[in-house]
Image (cartoon, rainbow, N blue to C red; front, side, top):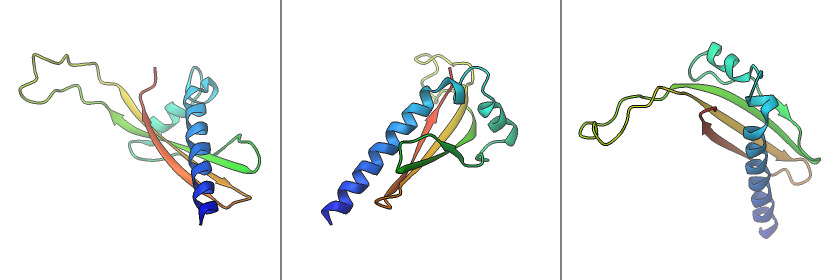
Length: 116
């Protein structure tokens, strides 16, 4: 029972670490990468096909990117003067799923983000 808990914790940490790596990887989400444009073309709420991501053996990892629409430029009633209305920004969702082949433990994390 303790081994299962430890394996699940390690899988959680692996997934969280790889998710952060992807968010910082300019080859996937930045510059001339087409991942974000492809997500917009698919439309709101339509995830990409799962894409393999390099992970240390025995961990396998896949991610999907989903366009979630634009942020709302409007503020709640009564807050009109206390908050500025930002220009709408495109929002995305990144889902990272990992599995350890040795322990059969895996997790899935979802992180929302607005690209720079």
